[in-house]
Image 1 (cartoon, rainbow, N blue to C red):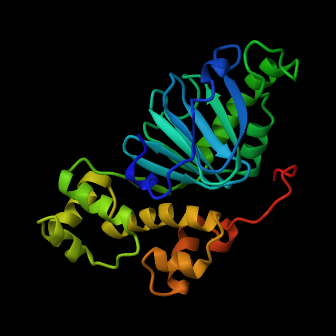
Image 2 (image 1 turned 135 degrees about the horizontal axis):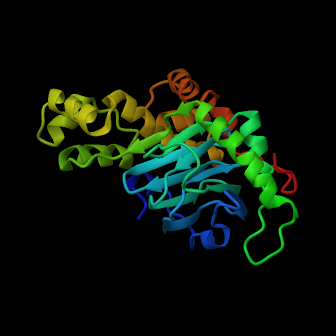
Image 3 (image 1 turned 180 degrees about the vertical axis):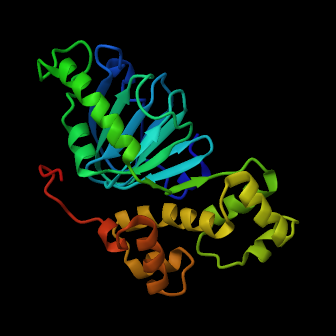
Amino acid sequence: MPTPALRAHAPTTSVGPLTPHLFEPDALRPLRAKEHFLRADTLVELHSHAWPQLTFSTRGVIRLSTLDGSYIVPPSRALWVPADMPHSITLIEEAELRTVYLHRWLGPTWERCEVLEISPLLRALMLSLDTTPDGQAPADPHASQRERWIAPLLVDELERATQIRIDVPLPADKRLRQLCEALLRNPAARATLADRARAIGASERTVARLFRDQLGMSWQEWRQQAVLAHALPLLARGMAVSQVASASGYATDSAFCAMFKAATGQSPTAFQHKKKNPAAIS
């Protein structure tokens, strides 16, 4: 099931796991790539597989959810998903969804999802991979040989990539989870941490400690991630920045824009939906 961060706008279309079994990596083909053009509000249902993956889109913001939270992935980022981790994907905009599967002995030993900055080289390597499923002749007759050549360079570039925190983890502690879910339901509420702590029968000091112990971040850091998860879909649907700022609990546009740029490296307007030529995939 999607986490509470996904409930603000329910997907209108639900699809299965997009046939990962037709792209299983092995020793001869250690990298396998696939692409799917999907409409906005499509949910790729919860699933897992025995190999790690990189997920990204050439355009459009996507949100990948695990049992412990959700991750925002704009086109300038890719998401590393470890082997055997259940995950679902929500298309916030119409997008070309790309996935690169790696053989289990390839890649970093990261045990959690990681949002990565995509370098020009990493993007070129991922987009150069053949996307033909098993059972069909590859479009590139030398695909398996190229995949073996590309694999070590792609992994090296992966390990050099800057890791970006754009996720909304959820705690195991019932009281803290109650507080987190209340904010996810209503990000515009400007209650202080002390107010929110009283609502769950705890002190502000206890809640601050729980954020550190359970989620490895401060209340302010977690709230920023939750605001981003709320704001990006609104921007993608064309809402004005001033309205998004207010809906996210910010008193001024400038404060919201400063937070947003510090977190994503881009201004909110860079994520606003603009009509594009459907034949042009940037």
